[in-house]
Length: 307
Image 1: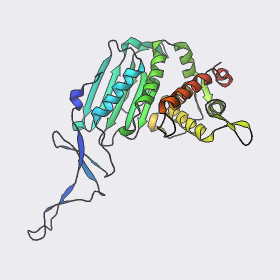
Image 2: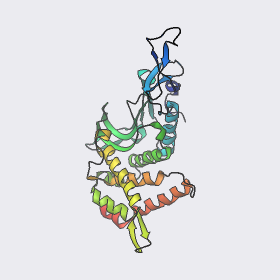
Image 3: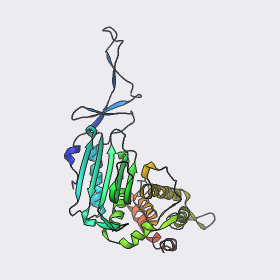
Image 4: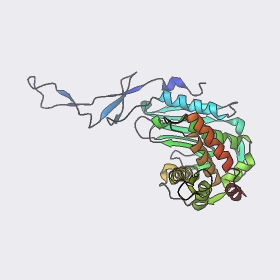
């Protein structure tokens, strides 16, 4: 389903060699315009107009706007959000070097914080010239500043240095979580999670006794899987930084407290973010992980925190 204005992003970019004016040129010496080593850099240009957009490294892999927008639209379709009267805005800046997407969902208008009504909005930015990282956020904004300092409530985010790493399933799960929050399905309960402050130690204990718990064959006791626990806590730290903090304007792992909402989002990110392996099907692994998340929500550790 096409949601955003594809006509504005109907172009591709490619890398090309950089050349310089060789002042020492003579007819017997060689060409005056000589190519620079790829190790110095390469030109990124639009293929439709041949206009330059940026200077990039040789290792840079261009990802076309049409590809990333298609993935965002796919994620929104999977989210289950009510698209009635939804508004979609596509903004292209600086000759195509930057892209901003905005989507409003009036069917899910709600009241938050001080009692004012807000419309849930998705804001996404990406770029070809490196000025914007791949950054998509879903929230209920009263206003949204250019530098990402927001006033309102942020429910989901997806951040990465490059669009190539955009995971449709993971982002769809994040948006689905936000959609359930704002649609009234479990609204009161999820709002309680959002406002419930928990310490890092409490979340470590939660994950240690639920998602990361495993049976140690040496001691024959239940112990947390340290690798899994570390990954879960890394996601939780990132969720706190982006949802309750100042996004990438705040240094990583600066917060010792967060919320049950970010713990829930860390758990659902883990359940939906499955890397392909030779010995298992990602689909089957996701089903198993989703079942573990459901069990976590009924565990004594979770119920004690949510009380």
